[in-house]
Image: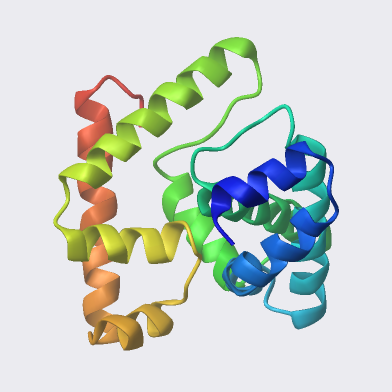
Length: 186
């Protein structure tokens, strides 16, 4: 079913919207959730929460790209769930590594000024990504959006794990310089 039709089902409050979303984007959302949470049960619960959040968000929202909307919901819910599950225990989990790698460069604020800065920062990072060659952009997104492990990325892209690590390190340094040039305190 076309995305526009699925969105219309949400707007019509037709429960078939959830079923169609699950059919079309269930595996995609599970992949995102599983990479972050690392357990099938938690990933499934997170994806089910995604459908509920989509139901509650549509309307009033009307996303232009349904896959991105559902992927972002899933990712945010998975990270929230991850933080709750690992609040007391720290160390060694791949998601922590992903967050730590970028945490050196960016951090969020919840005050109004911080929210404006966060929006501007997102735009700057998107600009940075658009300027990268496709292979580097894919590498960056696989690691920092989908939370794929180094070995997963290496296998998918036909690279060695060391090459992936080196490339990601260079990309982080390049992002840091890019943001610094635009006035972000790093």
